[in-house]
Image (tube, rainbow, N blue to C red; front, side, top):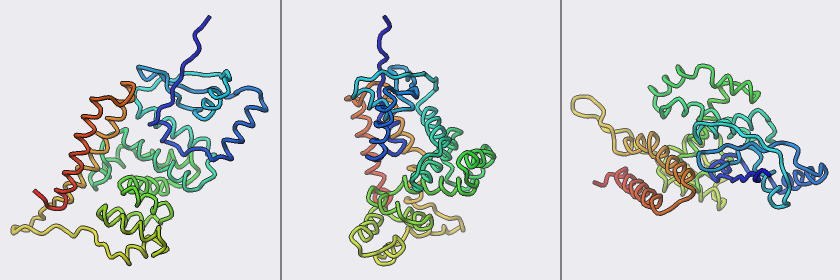
Length: 290
């Protein structure tokens, strides 16, 4: 007799998409109860250590709770990054997100990961040119799948990238902000972002633009000019470039390694503490401290 299939839910993959609402979960369970079984196969991937659910996490939770059997099929991926991109594209193909914000964010995440898979940070003008050259059809391909324009895809990608760099409080404030407001917010120091977010949260301002005007934060000024006419790159700009190009990749890499090893153990903690120490030090250096 064949051994029952053992599946696991990856927190990293689970966080990729928005959770179902209580009403949506209730309806899904009602559908399964009405059918008497789970009809759609759960998709899983063996990540080298265990079988990870790729599609059907909510169905899997219902099946596990009710001790229900379920159909399944496996897929092959080279990495968690490839699995993430498949999940995003698969969800985008369904086009069943009723929340406009969630659908917009899904489009942006898909586009940004498609670019990231080809390498590069895609934030500087040089990188932007390289990205557009390497991926001439990426935005259009996603646009056709999502039923929007290519310019909308790129705009959503820029918005998602900007929000990912905001402080925790500012991310909440950015949910109802316009693209222009998100861009302005991203240019502020984290402490100033928090001030703006608080002003919106407590009702001192109705919009992010109004909060920025009331709290009076100013983005970092332009770097001074050297005596020979060449611009001296500020420490703030250098730290920002380093953070955008490398720190995020290292953090995600640590999470992926922990997933592959089966959890966050002592060595993960050492590496994670070192990374956090580096981030804190970079923040101080960004402000001019030696």
